[in-house]
Length: 243
Image (cartoon, rainbow, N blue to C red; front, side, top):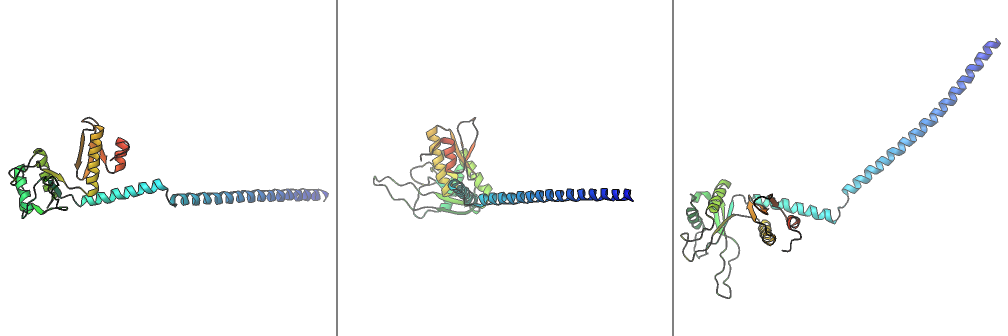
């Protein structure tokens, strides 16, 4: 009987130890749970803070870059709308003229068989220029021609490049003028092309040209070809653009 009491006492003592250990473990688990909860709260705060930073109002440079990017994309879309167009400069302007017939005559001189059905429209653009005070005749307004297909436009431009230096003799009466046939550019690209030519001339770069409405430049025959999409590219290639 006494032995039984001793064993029961030992069991009770062991159970008490288990209870104490269980209580301690519960405390530890509770502390760990609180720590995990604290960590989760901090992570949520950090994630929220990061989202706030990425969606907050951008700084001046970010805004400037975004505006430039949007302008470039808008200009690219506008240029795509001119993919069938050419611009002819140098043909004297006369009252009662027929621009379509002038274009056909020029194509014949360039050795390209262009037909009237290949032309959607042909017209002078811009305000008519007045004579200078010196009496010198004004530069004629360019003729913008829209072809039925881009392939026709490209063929006309290729013919003009093969016969680079062609003048208006045989195309129309009057003193011959040098005639230029180029793809039509948006006002933005036309201005950018002008500035690119000026910067290339100033820096001694050899080549600047357009292809499919895009502007390219090259320092020499062996250097890399660079595309110019905005004034920022000129600043990058040549330093600060002074034009």
